[in-house]
Amino acid sequence: MTAHTRTRRGRRKLTEPPLVRWGLTIVALLFLLLFLVLPLFTVFSEAFSRGLGPYLTSVQEPDALAALRLTLLAAAIAVPANLVFGLCAGWTIAKFDFPGKNLLTTLIDLPFAVSPVISGMVFVLLFGRQGFLGPWMAEHDMRIVFAVPGIVLATIFVSFPFVAREIIPVMEAMGKEEEEAAQVLGASGFQTFFRVTLPNIKWGLLYGVILCNARAMGEFGAVSVVSGKIRGLTNTLPLHVEILYNEYNFQAAFAVASLLALLALVTLVLKTLAERRLEQTVRLKPDTTADGEIVRSVRL
Image (cartoon, rainbow, N blue to C red; front, side):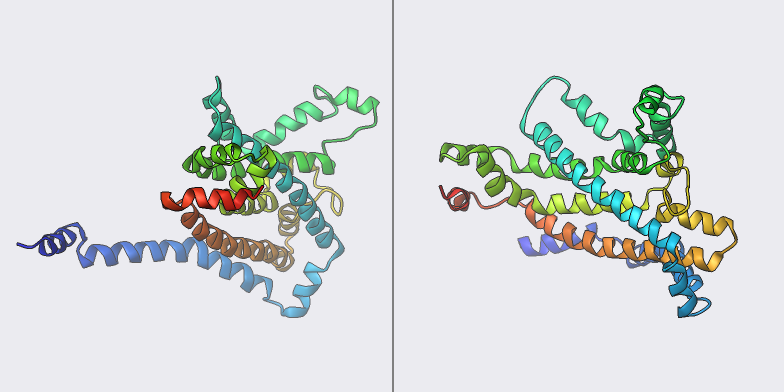
């Protein structure tokens, strides 16, 4: 018996019967149809149920535009802040060994375990008028809760793990050899980071930024607690959708919700592209070309 024949028989044993494969595929497709395609279809069908004119009127309403601006503002502040934190945390955890390393990794995952409503309540207890820092802030005319700073802080808290959790495995897979080789060749710390480390982690970094941005724009629980839901001032898009729906203005609610759905679809496409490039990045490079690539990267 040839090796090729044994390999083919081994593959046949590892392959599931056609009935099982088709059954699992049908179950997965039905699940996606029920929980993804059907809700998206409902959102867009209800949004355009009265035609294009009412839809445009709903999304161009001053309160809707104010909510959109605030959502983009919170994301524009939260994402860069989490990007800097993620890079610092990823570098520290992947490149160094120190006491409390496991504790730091666990704390980064804290927003995944804590309910967003609870995290919002923490900010209220800290910065509210009756909170720990509330009286001092009131004396100095500083306002966090029920204002834009509170929304930004809550958004940063619920979205800060995403960048760090994406680049830590990539940095660990890279190892330290290329950075050490660059330093031996005379590269400074900034040169090593921008010419060696950053090109190797760029797709993982982009993947984490996309996920962070999606969470920042779609956050509801924590922002709902700290915003005060002041129309035109502290309402983000998710909160504005809730208010419109509670007022039985269903067409306007679904019209504004369609904006979030569009943002989610764009994020999904970008996430897929970044994920493919990330899979290519984490593959091991041939050892014969590593030193040459480092020399070309440093270029002192």
